Length: 315
Length: 315
Image 1 (cartoon, rainbow over the protein chains, first blue to last red):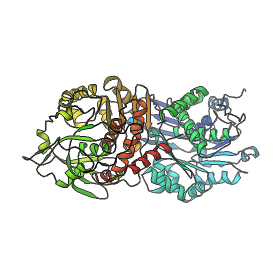
Image 2: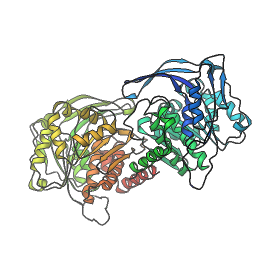
Image 3: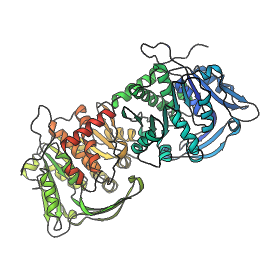
Image 4: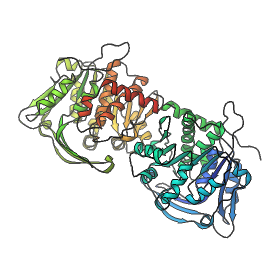
């Protein structure tokens, strides 16, 4: 298979590899306007597809006997290495059913079947262990720690989580945060982690007590980076065709890490650029159900959105 | 009395004058942490104090027999011309009682006494009619139109409103919008005006059907400018000492118009700079009850916040 198109980084022809550990899921989603049944989702699917526009991703996850060949092909087509995607024939793929309410600002989980995900325990191959750029998607903190323990010499680790692990495994996730280079959470999660609803206070608190660098995502209101060299605030891309917000955060983090791997740098200036790309890619994700728009995006489209974002934030 | 300190604009030693028509009120405010009784408020008070850091404001409004001398002095001290502030001895000053809920995201009006404001009908003096830069603060649209009719040759008009006039005087406010150069509203108001909760769609709709240039304020999430030359999105200043959000929007608009009057320009680039200053000044307003912090802010403090805002938005 030919190499998928990637966004070229000046003076650096060959990007480093990215490893993404997380969920691969079948989502059933209802929005105020439409619905989708059993569509490809999960943190690792979104993050890998997003990262693939910048660097070659290795996916680490598990699916069940019902996982469709066309979904495997969708991931492979974007150059994602699937050797770490285990198939557990004894059960079904992790399934999530969610409903978005008016304005998409709130969603309810209506059903959640862990299925094969419940027994998932990632064991990395030698190649995976050697991957320098790693995203710990929202899986159980024990598994995130187990992946950290297996890594040879990671250069940059991004950690994400969801509400349930903050509520039930706070101390374990605190260990993950301390060992990561960058924590990427949304404003609900940062409030749960710190008890602070003010995003600025929460971000500073997380830097002091959690992870050395923090990004708090605010959905349609953009994101904020808390770094030792300063604060950076970026609005969301002006999306007017919102169809399904699922996976926006994972796409953001995946593209962000992909850009870091592509440049081989992770300083303040690089992280700001990475957020522009993450925001551009996430804006494509939400314009369609599942990974449809994300998987088919063109590099020129991503670059155009990044440029538009840069223009609309330049005072 | 000596001229109050103003922020100097390069190559333009003398700012033009600003006229602000709006309410002068006594507010009683309860927040989750503290409360204030009968404190100086109102759209015109906040906007004039904010504008005074850039240009000399003329206030046009009405107060009752209970208006305190110290509040008059507070305004005069910042160089605000009070000759248009009528005193109606037959009644009391407009009074508003509001309560902010958890996180300050929502507020309820618990009591509202129009008092002398009910009979207010602004008649401009010759000097006021000749003022080139005008803010129509949130008063009845009929009064905004009456002020517009009295102006000689305005150069730039900013219009604001509140929910109640959108609900009860939609067509009259539409006339105000069409005659203004810039509409400044918050996201709740833009949604009420257009039926669109997506800020980007609402802003574009307002430009097509309302006012040629539009700013939508999103509180802690910043503001967006919709201009024929492009879109500009600016985050809020990272306030961590929020005490009373009342007047933030009026301070933003007042400082914005003051800057425009100080520069004598109102192109896209000037409006972007004006938003930086508006955001910086509004961030001071919310750090204290009433106009206390706003009235006492220093020019260097405002400039420092503008600079900080510029740094944290630079990709």
